[in-house]
Length: 68
Image 1 (cartoon, rainbow, N blue to C red):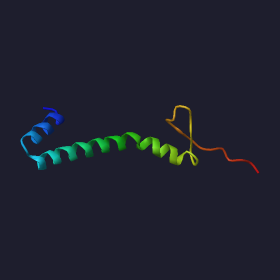
Image 2 (image 1 turned 90 degrees about the horizontal axis):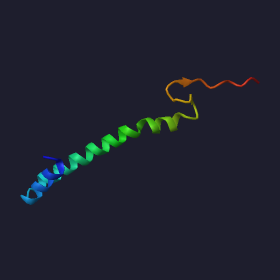
Image 3 (image 1 turned 180 degrees about the vertical axis):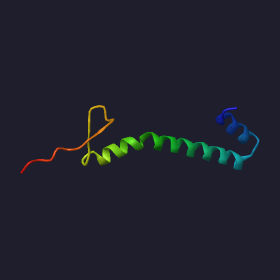
Image 4 (image 1 turned 135 degrees about the horizontal axis):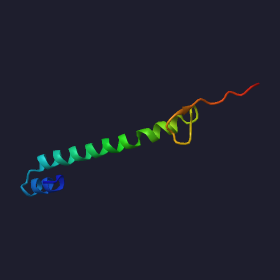
């Protein structure tokens, strides 16, 4: 049974507390999945001014120091 079907079933049975738990659990799981998906993007944007990445963004390239 999918989570949606489980949620609807609990609501129909009047088990609002259990339905709320199922919904909260599903929303938390989706939130964590979304956060884990964008972590690397956020880190790359945050550290971009400090560390240059090469074209395929797989290896860190040290910024060249300017000669003064």
